Length: 244
Ligand SMILES: [Zn+2]
Image (cartoon, rainbow, N blue to C red; front, top):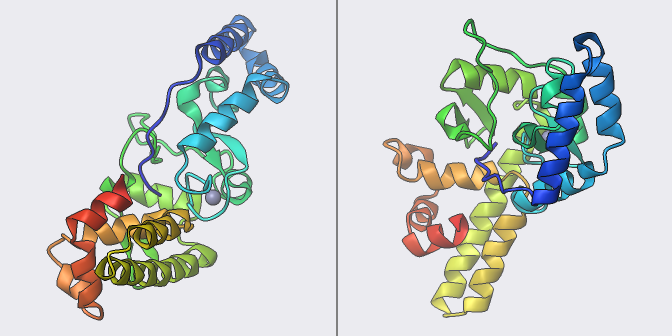
């Protein structure tokens, strides 16, 4: 899971969403959920919302929770069943794959004793404030209760994802070494090509974790098997190319 910048919606769509919310608010509280569900299914604004989320998603429209599969649907961060009034709330919309949307997170929405969500919204906060990726195993450890709940609710350590992250680490390492060879040949096109390889990879959280952990106090240990990779990850020109 990585931080994602949320864009603004076109004014027409924002107005349509606000109107839809007012309609739900006007209904009797007992009927809001049913009304909201039906209104969302039939909403013409849904297409624009999805297209905007796809633009925001990193690389090839990846799921904003797992970062692996293509995001195929609009997920309601706070489920419609729990809060129908947020059905058409743009700030409540994320792009998710079918596994995360339907089989893992589903209708779960844990909260703490004060009622605050115990689930990371990657468009509102930095997931790395709550999660630490163990690069050698592809496994997330939690740094906070919110991180712990997010790992459980989104199934972030399911075997397919941990294997994928280890694979992503290898692909990123290969691409960065190729980037360095291209740099020695002074081939700007090839350097850009390798940056693109990394950007289009699933599991963008792996590369971002590598870039962060390259400057962590334990960096020498994390990259003990690949000091050349650590040196590359610390290069300002490469960091800028990967993070821009
Ligand atoms: Zn997913």
